[in-house]
Length: 104
Image 1 (cartoon, helix red, strand yellow):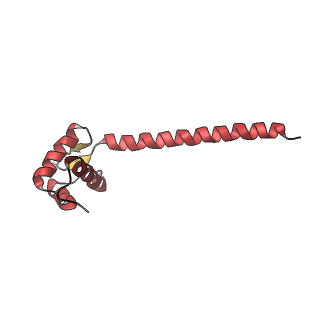
Image 2: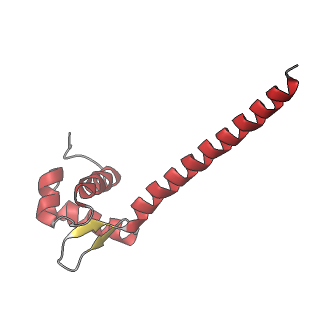
């Protein structure tokens, strides 16, 4: 539940979460205010901060959307987890090969 007393960092995260609902189409300031319950002034200020950090961008139609940065971070996580799984499979194959050599 949104709290009117949320600090700027929490507001920015909740705005980001709201924008993930419309990754390609973006949201207007009014839609973000409605989705988060924050004041228009706070939403404007937090969007500027998020834009400076590279997390959101303003579309040509004036709507706000998630930038490629947080999506790339998610992809980086997926690649990391895939690499870990591959390393685990390789380890398992080496262990299995060694175990087979130990069989009579």
